[in-house]
Length: 516
Image 1 (cartoon, rainbow, N blue to C red):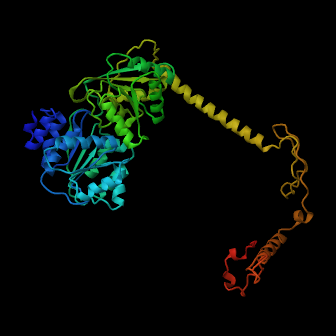
Image 2: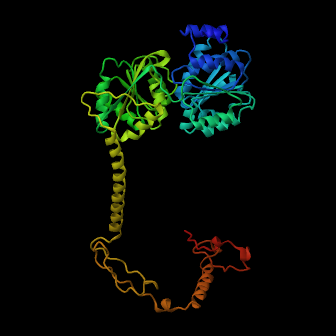
Image 3: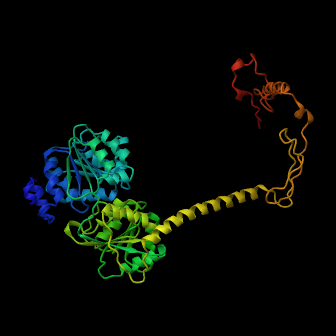
C-alpha cells in the first residue's frame, strides 16, 4: 500500500514525498482512513513506527477548510513533555508546508508574550503541555470552546508523570461533540479506562503487541559485579568501540545524569547532558547539537525517551535499568527507527535484579547477555542474595541509627561536668522521692529538689476549686484599659457591667501591656 491509496489530499502527498516517504507504516495505513472519517481512534504501536504522522497527516486535510478565530484554536494536541511537543510541531511544519495552517506551541520555559500573540492571531493547531495550557487558560488568554479535534499523544506517559488530573480538567473544558484520538506505544489498564471515559465508540488499532520492542533493535545485557564506578568503567569500554557513532545514555535520576556526564567528559568523550531541570533554551540547543552531530553522546533522563526522532542514533545504553519496565521499550525505541537497525545495551548491577526481571517479564523473553573484557558478571542467585541481604541490613542499620540517636539524646539531656542544676520546686507527685538516683549512663546524682510549701501538699479537694476560682477572679485585676495619663502601666478595671462590653468583654482587653 502507498500513501496515494489512503485518501490524503495532493498537497499532503506532495509534502510526504518531499520528506522521502512513499509507503505508510502499519499504524499509519490503519489509522489514517478512520481519522479522515471523523471516528475516535485508540492507537497502540511500537515506538518508532510513525504514530505522530498517523494523526498529523489526516488532521492537516481536515483543518484545510475553515478559519481559526482569535484565542479559539480549532484542534488541540496534548503532549507530556516539551521535547515531544516540539517534535509534533516539526511534523506539522514538514507535512503542512503546502497548506496555510497556523500553529502555536505552548510549552514551559518559553516566552509567554510570544505565545499569547500567536493565540491572539488565531491558530488552527494548538500543541501544548498540560501545565502551560492550563496556565494560559486561567489567565483568560485562550478559549477551548471551538476545539473540534483532541489528540492525547503518549497517554501512558501522561499517566506515569501524574498528568491525568490535568488531562481530565482539560477534557472537561472542551465541547462534548468532538473527535478524540489516543496514541501510545503501550496500553496499560489505567490508560484503557481513561480512554473509555473520553472516547465515543472508538476504532481500536493495534499494529503490534503491547509493550514490545521493535524487531530492528538488537538487545544485549551486561551484568556488572561491583558498584556505580565499575558500571561507568564498563560503559566507557563499550563506548570506545568503533561501531558506536551516536548514542543515547539513559539514567533514572537527574543526579546520575550529571555524574555520568562529568565522568565521560573527564575521559575526553564528546558528550552532553539533558534532563528536566535544565532551562528550555539549553535543552533545545543541546538537542540541536546532538542532531547535527556536534556531540556524539547524549546522557539523558526519560525526558528524551519519548517522541524524539533522531535517525542517526546507532546505540542506546541503559546505564540504569528503568524502574518502570515499559520505559525500557521507549528508551530503546530511540534507535532502529523507520526500519533502520539499531543496538540497545543495558548495564545492570546485582541490586537491579528486581527491575531487570520486570523488564524481561514484560518482553516475554530474556535479554541476551554479552561478555565484556574486564567485567565480571553476576548470576541470579547473587542478585537475590544481595537484595535480601540489603533488606535485612537496612533494618539493622536503621535500628543502629535509632539507638545511636537515642544515646545522643540521653547524653545531651545530662548536665556538663561542673554544671550545677538549679533547684526545682517539689511537686505533689514527686514528694515521695527525696533523693535522685543515678541514670543509666552513670552520671552523678542530682540534688534533691526544694520542698514545696506544706499547704500546697495538704490542700483538700474541696479547697482546690476555691483557690482556682480566686485565681481566675484575680486575673482581670492585673490588666485593664490604658490610663488617662497615657503613660506608665495600664489601669486595672474589673470585668463587670461598668465595662462597655459588659460581661461579654473579650479576654485580650484585660491582658497587661507595657507601654514604652
